[in-house]
Image 1 (cartoon, rainbow, N blue to C red):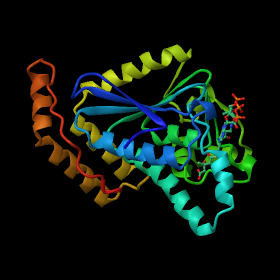
Image 2: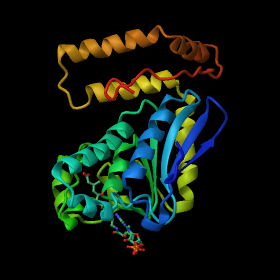
Image 3: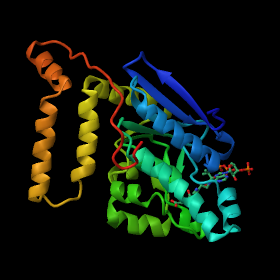
Length: 277
Ligand SMILES: CC(C)(COP(=O)([O-])OP(=O)([O-])OC[C@H]1O[C@@H](n2cnc3c(N)ncnc32)[C@H](O)[C@@H]1OP(=O)([O-])[O-])[C@@H](O)C(=O)NCCC(=O)NCCSC(=O)C[C@@](C)(O)CC(=O)[O-]
C-alpha cells in the first residue's frame, strides 16, 4: 500500500525495532478523512503482525498531534444517506478498536492539539506522553455532533464522571489537567523532552519479555472492570500457569537466577481474539 497520509520511521535493529507512525497532513493539523483512516488501520495491523517490531509510537507532524475527524469530510457525509454514513462511521470506529486491541505496546506522542478524534487516538493508545503545551478536548458538541467512536476509550481513560463534564462542555483540557484525570501518563516540560521521555519508556518495554507483555495487555482487557468471580480467579490462575511453562518464561527466570540479561526471542503474535487479525 502506498501511503499518502503517513510516514513510518523504524528505529532500532530487528527484534528491538520501534515503529514511529507519523500522521503527515500538517496543513490540516492531521485531521483524518477516509484515506488516513484506511492507511492508519492497515499500518497498525501490519506493524502488529511484524515480529521485528516491539513497540508502536503514534505521532503527528507539524503543529498538532491531530485535530480529529476532518470536518469538511464530516460535512460532506452529512449530505449522504444514513446507510452510507453508517458504513463510514463504522470504519472510523474500527480504527479506534484496532488501535486499542493491538498486541504490541502503543505510545501516543502528543504535542499541540489532540482534539475530538485526536484525543480519542491518544486515549486508545496504551501509554500517552504529552508536552506541557499539548491541549485536549472532546469538542464535538460545538459542531452539533458527539464523541461517539472515541467514547469507549476516552471514558475508560478519564472515567464516567469526568466524561459528563468534558463531553458536554467541550472545554479545552491542558496537559497538566489531562494527567490529573488519567488521560496522560507523563507530561514533559517542553516538546523537545517528548522523545527522550518516550525512549526511556521504550527502554523499559524492551527489557521485558514480548510474549509476557502481550499476555499482560490481554489480561488487563480480560479482567478490567469485572467483579472477581470464580471464573475470573480461574482465568487468572490459568494464564500464569500457562505462561510459566513457555520458553520465554524459562529464559526470563533463568536469566535472573544466572544474573544475566534475558535474551528474548520474538515471534508473530497470535491473532487478536477481538478483531481476528
Ligand atoms: C487544530 C486547531 C486548534 C488549530 O488552530 P490554528 O493553529 O489556529 O489553525 P487553523 O484553525 O487556522 O487551522 C489550519 C487549517 O487546518 C484546518 N483544520 C483544522 N482542524 C481541522 C479539522 N478537524 N478538519 C478539517 N480541517 C481542519 C483549518 O480549517 C485550516 O484550514 P485552512 O483555513 O488553512 O484551509 C483548530 O483548527 C481547531 O480547533 N480545529 C478543530 C479541531 C476539532 O475540534 N476537532 C474535532 C473534530 S470532530 C471529531 O473528531 C469527531 C469524532 C471522530 O470524535 C466522532 C466520533 O468519535 O464518532
